[in-house]
Amino acid sequence: MLKLAVLVSGRGSNMLRLATAIDELQLAARITTVIANVDCDGITHAKARGIDSYVIRRRDHDSRAAHEAALAACIDQSGADIVCLAGYMAILGADFVNRYQGRMINIHPSLLPAYKGLDTHQRAIDDGAATHGATVHLVTPELDAGPTIAQARLEIEPADDATSLAGRVLQLEHQLYPFVVASLANGHLTLQDNTPRWADPNSAMAAMPDHMRQILEPALILAAADAGAS
Ligand code: GRF
Image 1 (tube, rainbow, N blue to C red):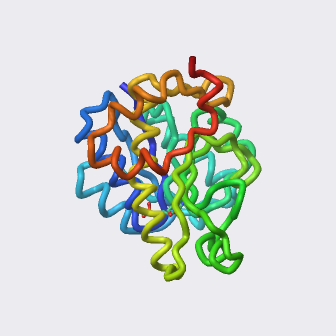
Image 2: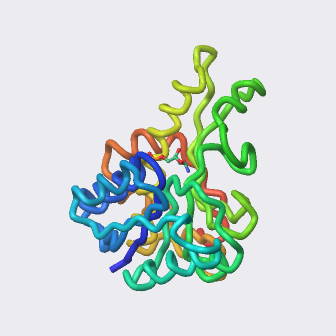
């Protein structure tokens, strides 16, 4: 059983997708806790699903280190194997990140290494970029710079504005993050030594239901596919 702690700060749609995909795909996985740093819809959604959830606020702690120690205690108490950042809007310190090295992952709304940080959709449009998308990556102390696990790509349409593009990317995110978690749960993907290895990408995709495969398969880029594929 793969146990996940999911960290959120906002609407929590990726967290919800992970929860629904775990049920739909009957994965050997469970969200053991959802933690936010602010009151947010993500916590409301988690509670509605009966998932243990907590708000651990920075302002209730004297320092970032104290805040992150409380966060780590909550994660560890939940028995989580993997920490999934899903719109957690705080920069995490190196000590915290290193504590979860190789088992903390994030979803970011761009094709990293392009557009690290915020406001990715508008920046891509302003640059006249042809493609855009989402990345799931391992978290390292440098922001949005950890090893890529998988990406989903789309073409920016002439009619796209930041809002429409964000919506289209989010639709990809909602397939990509569950795909990565499903692949971890069923052993198609490992993260040993802070290195993603796809043992059998075709089987990983074949394990997805049609409605996910139809959206994800044409968009998917597995950066590390050659590291473990035969
Ligand atoms: C997503 O776009 C994710 O890529 C980024 O923050 C957003 C979170 O959205 N890291 P939600 O809270 O999961 O709806």
